[in-house]
Length: 139
Image (tube, rainbow, N blue to C red; front, side, top):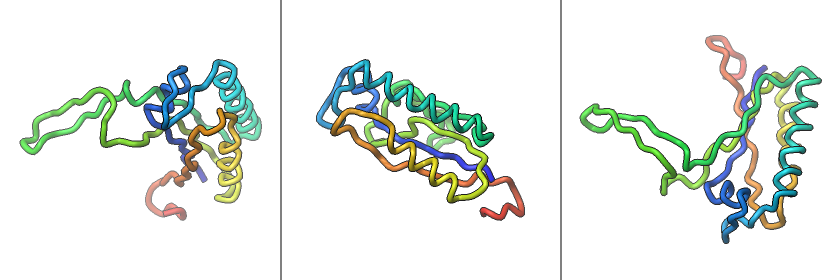
């Protein structure tokens, strides 16, 4: 069964990792950023070796996002940049092919052990089964 494992973040978190801390997210130094990347790299390597890794990506900061929609008249509306109403956004994800919900939950729990500065937010990791279509037993 394939699962989407998601981590969340805020614009303040991305700014903190770039050395601009705030009350919402303390400043990261370069060593802490490198420790985080090394941890994620080791986790990805282990998942690739076990055959469970399908894809994994970190996403850019919300300030570089774009939303495409339509207004009440059906006209195209394109909005760039951070959104005041959005508190948290998808910061990164893994697509994993795991034998069970228990196994993917073990992996998600490991993500929570990623090194970070004291006081940094550590939001929960979300797991969603990927729907493979009609007859999917996870639906």
